[in-house]
Image (cartoon, rainbow, N blue to C red):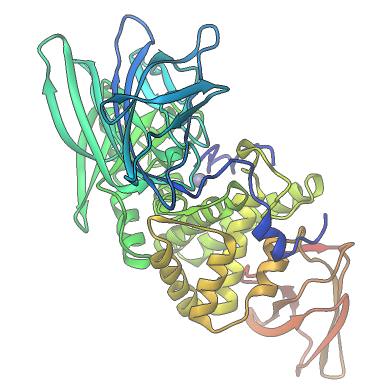
Length: 535
Ligand SMILES: [Zn+2]
């Protein structure tokens, strides 16, 4: 997702001290979570038209109250001058509800009753400033695209607009009859209403976060590309891009198969790949991925982007970060699983190439932004995307894979996904899942790479004397020394021999017996350590 242009490697984005695990438990983003309230499902009836950009909405929201019936608070951006929503009615069941609407929050006070499950309806209308992008495609065709990430759903959908509360969702879209409608979920109905409008209904039975629900309404060409493990894979592209789009998005079925085979079951009703107006390079909406308009070239230039967005269906969408500060569980995973897919298709050299580019970005970024991956000082979800959450998060998974070995790494990944599928997790949950499978104590690894800033900055030299190679190695970063396994490559007669050592001090010397002087020595020839080589 998101400002992710792999061919540009990749994007610009906003992006101290040791932070201990205990802080992780206490501090999170600032969204006021109410654990007593659990939204079960949303049904959004939306009417769109061609005369103006007003949307008319009716949201039906089923809520389970856990212990006691409490105030239901929903996010919705209220009208201010031209944009925003006005509420006409709120119902509880079929009775007018007791509610207030101010500061972009709807507070609904449920009636006295012992019933723990309630249904509310919010009737509203207005022009959304963001979230639902009402515009024209690059070919001049009028279009409506949902573009919610991270918290823009509240501009057009009354909801608990934070990923900690996921719910099933149904869209019932009434739109001028010449449009094609795609949305999160399985298509249930497409009916001409006889008044120039058409009703199209989609329902997603798996719980989804509002950040990744969407609709796409314009003139589309669409095609069933494949059915993979029972999941229909489709392409929805502008009619002017029909053949190129079908060709570019065709690789999605191969990617889907790889992830299902290696991670676990796919969670959603379908996998639609949609050319779209989006502020991002790609947006991993659950089962209905949006790719930027110029992703379609007919030259298969976005395979890595497609792999990244499809990887999100497991990580971010199904196993979802419970707090924005842990967004690396989404972006770092999508970054690395895209690399794993590319490695699977193109070989290990491709993994190294990708990681080399990412390492350079991480090092450059750190000089301007010395902060840890899980940065609890960030309060605004728009600021959690950075080289840290994407590239460095991906690198941490690469190092974890090396530490555990391929077999345990994949077992742990499957265990983590199996445990948190259709649910929420924090970094500690991922650590515990990997510990359960590997039997290793991973706290120091997670502490060092995720909750502490920086990386080893290594100054080193080698010499050969009297049948021995001597390597002098120094960690020169200003803060504490890192603890890591290091592979040392000894090059002799075009052959690479790997010696493995553990480094955990500021300054260390390693010696190996060797019959003849080597041609060269390289640190970490196989790209398993995130470090900066200092001369
Ligand atoms: Zn992403």
